[in-house]
Length: 603
Image (cartoon, rainbow, N blue to C red; front, top):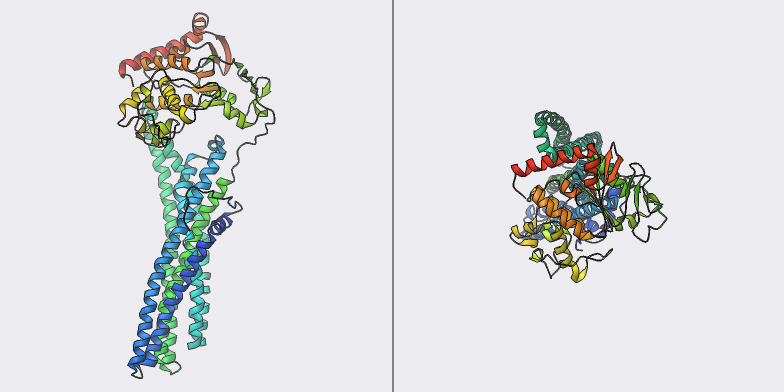
């Protein structure tokens, strides 16, 4: 039974941590059953070795029958060889169980994150998702490796009890009651471990999120002089997490210590009782040897049972976190009315912004969050009274909104892969486009048309050209086939911004809403992007939230926003002449841009 990393993982059981673990077992029950059978036979044969040894002593060594001694010895060698093979197959099978659980949980979590879409960040922090993906998935998959050996341990435990019953009912009773007694002693520690582990995971997710925030805002913190303050807070929080980790480790160490020490005491008791019975003549020398062998063989199932309890205690904590994540739901989509058949006006009553179809519109405000809020409302990423045509956006099915309106987030994620795949064309396409960015006359897609088939390379060329990103392609060793790191960390800020813009333009949406698409570019590159963007989006609805004069001068309509509402509307030059507030805001941005150009060459 192979592991397919791309098959449908199935619908997980979200009713609790234990039920989720049981679902993972059911999804690969043949493999789990095979692991349980292999582990059971393996452990039973471990107990068979002392039995064969006892027969060799009683029927071969003691009476001096060399033929019988050789026969029983050969049987022990054969059992040892078979057991070595069984141990190898058991380990291989349980490794497949672990990998299946790992891949299946990853696919379930990633699939649900995809379904949540933009609602994900509003319901759970980045640190929580990272902790689930890095820590909890591994813990869950590891806990399932105890399933096969756990079942085998129970079977072997019962088998050893049965074998000892033939030697001495008294010893068999001690063995059969010993492990439940161990469970009673270790049970409270298992429950305590679950509580400590859950608290540790929660704090770990919070600290992970803070690490991401710090990494993203380190340059800003340096500029504001807040690096030391934030570093002190992070050091304090990480110290608390370390202390919580010590608490988890303390409970774990007690479990492991008792898991080793108590079985030794228990088995020592069985050995002592067996030795007394042999001294009193109640059992033979061979039976005494077998009792000692059974005691040694019991070490494996007892250790596996304790390890299973430990791993499942941790696994159920991780599973509960996964189940909690799977319980998140996106905002309900109650849209029942079709979107306008033709390009129509987008209107945001909260700000008074009215977007005329087919025109390049700019939003200018001293507070970027106001413009971003408008774009989110017009793109239906936040609840609002915005309308499309005369239809409230909330009454239009979300799939129709997403198919025609694109909000280009300036911090949108960039996944690892070839540059062409990062922009949006799969690198499996044999046609490729290694030097397509050198062409400046590639056709643009028709309204509403998505680049598919043989048109992928020309559309990719057009998008790269419109974003003025040809120099990026030329500078990379393998052009569009060059591997790019996650979030394009091996590119500069301006290069990442142009790659994001090229990706947005490649989709050619009917309505493009972009926030500060050129904020990281020097003046020369920004002017090039402004000209090409206007040409590429000719006749298409485009809304830019920006304060750059280079972009504003190319806009058909500019809305000047004050306190989140439209204060004036006109062309860039009209507002410069009539609106002192607008003139001051734009002039300040122009001065900042000139200063930046003097400090840093074009990127």
